Image (cartoon, rainbow, N blue to C red; front, side, top):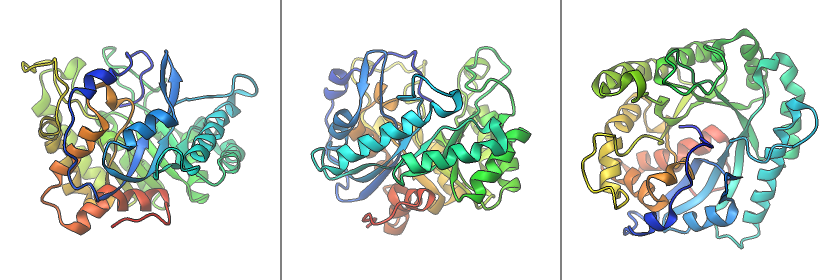
Length: 343
């Protein structure tokens, strides 16, 4: 799911009531999707991220995911997102000091550029690469849109992913060797197919298992959604240039009748997520599938420790090679992360 500034801040004390033994604590992990921000009175910057990274799992590196954080207040509108890239470079420098643990936090990043600029996006992409200090790996296009007004539209128009202006900009991204993260709803998965076919040399990373919609007009229709979503996931997976991120799914649905006073443990999280994630891994294969934390958004529902324990439970039966791909290898390839231990 995308960052929603309208939601309440995580309750760290509530999450702290549940502590688990860390499973497979030596397994190297690259977290390929987290945010940093200061908004609505909630701070999640390097100190807060470092506290989560220190929860027991072997997080060797992280990827910063754009979230409209620290944009420039003034200047040309199209250039204001450069502020986020500059900010990430500074947070990465804090991490590199060693004072926040051994993880290479914000080792690389993907940012935001207005792709409706078409070919005119190229100089902006070049500026992001320059101000990032070599960390900029690509762009995210959040194009989630649905005709039903009960669904929150992230994009201002439908079919943004296949808009002619966007495709012109994507051709530039492809030529520059950058990647494209895509966040949209499961009803739009065929747009990813079209994009991947049009740009076969472009590395595309599908965010959040393709974001199945389970509310609004789909409430109470989880089985129907799963079948429609799975068929779309299979079609997308047939394009070899597409990776998938595994995370950012609901844990407790409105129908949950258990004890809500305690946060969910990793067994509960794994049970809720397993069907969706196993379907993705089966379709894409471990080599193009990567677990993601989506923190601090996910922190509203479970702790960092529990989140990664849940992923490890889901992949408990995987081989050592498959685990390397799922927890670090796929992310390292998709985002061109070098010189980190993967096994």
